[in-house]
Image (cartoon, rainbow, N blue to C red):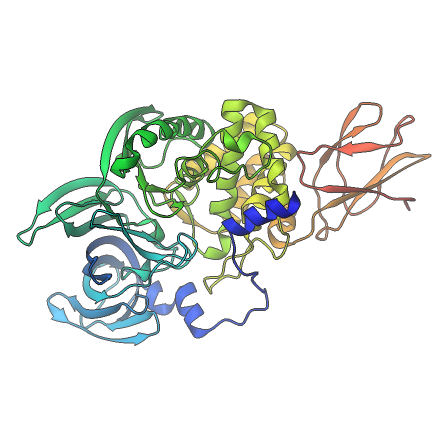
Length: 547
């Protein structure tokens, strides 16, 4: 059974293990650090215009980048991955010179860049973008025949970066305040991108341009283009902030299946607004869009490819049965609207902020509809998927994420912290508070850790160090003797300090407060204990204990 579960894990996340001793390159630094050519300007607005050509799988287009000058500098870094290329860059009507360094372009600005001033630059580009090899994990642009003589076009680029298909400031720390996305395609096709559809313009060359406007800040990888011969319908969700427009786009042959399966979208919103607070993008609406790959958390335009099955393409990743009560992609990818799109990491090393909380959202959804015990069963059931190979937190400044344990180990870490806090309503308010305090912000993982500690009323820094920055699972070592129960933590970071609930043989429950030193609890006749399974720890009976 374990081998089967691990097989599913590998199917989900078959990435090579990342060595913490990996040697990083100049290109890694250009991609993953806030270079001087990025630091001097604050992104405020994008207008992306793209015309995909399905005949030769090429793109051509332009991007207007508006920004505020923070300090004097005359070179701007714009990222665009090979084999795409910038063809022209213009500011205030003057064409600019530039040089390429791998996937980064350094454009020399003629106009003096004065602090406090708002400026813009327009960049034109073209070429054949990288084909998505195994989207969404190994992404890019996907071109899929629909059997009717048309081509379905979709994009997915988390980790890889949005610059795989359009020029941008491809670092997560800076987001535009708003964005216009203009996609020009054949007249018989429909594009679905982020935000609200502002207009559809018929062109003289038998094409149409779809103009989608995003009113809220958006991260680069959350921007998407989905082109197909879609059919659609809408409904209104009565949520915490009022009316929220829900829109659904699917292939015609799947319309009836989709209408049934997508009933889970308002159910998801009800559960997640309870746990996390209001949906973060009421102004931009919520969409589910069918695509040829599994799915992705594109902001306000969540993509779906789960074959209209419950669970993960018909599988329960927890092996408990609860994972077949809901559609994995609708729940998980929509959960990212709160953790990824609302609260966004500044550096991919803190990707756990996206994935640990969103993995945990699966547990909370299960609890909301099927009870607390069901939610616990689900998250505990996923522990067999944990590899404990390398730390969850990656390496900063080089576009390096950590272990894929950020999903299931991260979810179990959060479930454990809930037990430590031991107050379900306080925990719910912490989750809601995160989405309010960091509303539409990019964050360092340390900010999330500090917020939880502060509002939990206890220092959880060692708990985060243990689960995020170490691969060992804490072991409660204990022994029964004349003095009663003796216990301590082993297999931990130094000064690990986390309470744990145990049940003695007599049936009495105790919340122990172990440290790395032996402690004693007076007991009467108890010779065994069981650790509460809701804590992601292990236990070991010692033959003797030295006090």
